Image 1: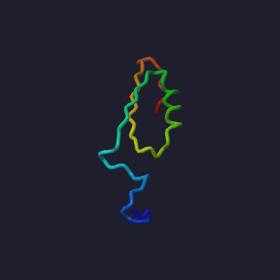
Image 2: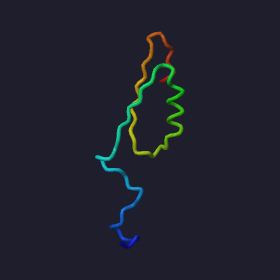
Image 3: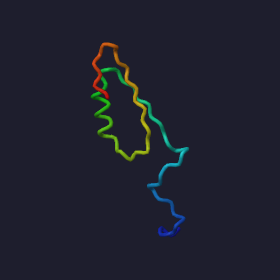
Image 4: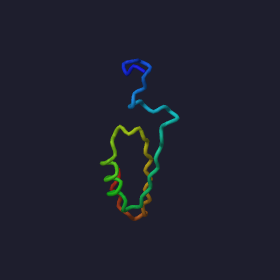
Length: 65
């Protein structure tokens, strides 16, 4: 197949709705640093959606907004 052809598939195609993933992450009150490190290394255009759930003690001073 001709690489210049419009029928050629790109290796950087946007995922279809069926190919997208939702990633759930959970952490305790002490996990904020680990979450920050994880997201700093995660490429912003990775095509993933993240749901972050943190368990906090009622008397813990939260650093999340």
